[in-house]
Image (tube, rainbow, N blue to C red; front, side):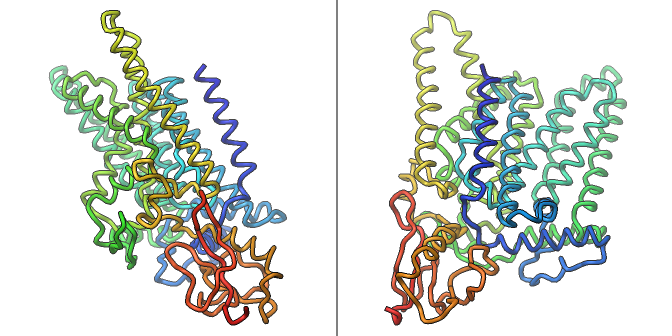
Length: 523
């Protein structure tokens, strides 16, 4: 049964990507990312002669951002040059997001067989802030996908560690996948630390026995060789997939680490009803956002899974190191975010890559609880039914709410909020909502269809409020500052400037998302 459920889920995911790729809006930085991908493509296909990827505004630090996914998008755009440029981009991004659900199925299978595979994949598919961003977020979604496959290769390596020489190939492949992840975002580099922690855990659990049996040196030698293979493959992959590092193989990576650890973003963010600076955000920013932006079952089951793992560690019943590796996907970056306090903004998108670990904790909890219920003695029949009922209510009821909310928010699912804060309706105005400004595409579509009712003296007209190079701006229209256009379109948190009348409002769930304005003097 779980195999068929998983197959159905993956088929539906594929249909979703193919049919919905052209329905979602564009983000405020999508044009920059697209240009960066094109410039990276030209560097490769000119054999390094075209270095236009270095010519972006220094404020953007574009060369110091990993380009590998943007390159894949550009490669597809050049390969299918006759197709719509932005549709190809959305489709490739969507396929990447779908790959993350496949990766979760692979991780779940390693940890819990077919049921684990289905639960993990379904958990990610039912996470609105993931599925609602797969078509236009070419940074945070690909990083989450990369981390999922990094975990899968780690689980595979741990399972095959004692089977012949397969560990050599698995170590090299893990290094390649980590390198690709780093070339999406530098955050993926933290997994090298997780690999080191895994080795320390092994020695803590088996070191005395290895010394006693005089087997410590072969094991240490094997681990050192694996570490060397992982490290070398990681760095070589980074050099191959990141032109900036290829041109600066010694100083490039340290420079990127230094810059990204203190990213110079100077802005305020809306957090729990208050405007706070991104560099001085509250210490509970990460856990609070995970709570308010995640479906309630995801959070509750992750807490249960954490409790079960801690209990097993205390009782020394946890024998499978892969369970700890799965938990590390969430806890290691979560702790680092709390300790290092990097600049974060746009809600939870910068740490979306830890959500798959949160979901895997929940899948583990469901399987452990179901297993315990199946083996409970008859004397505890009533308690078994109570626990089973609570589990079913949490899964079915909680995720049903998530699905209903997702449908009502479409195509802006990434503004999903938990019922803990009253959903989007009550969270609006207290938490960052449509920070991407993707509603501007719907607003412009309406304006193109209705502007004959609201004429302006200039033809073609000027339009204000759009970010640089937005693909939503029609050909010939003049993009200008918000207060200078014949028309202007706002989005959170930038209202229409004075002197404009609202002629249309884009709504989601019955609430305003962005407005189309025309100069009052034209009325």
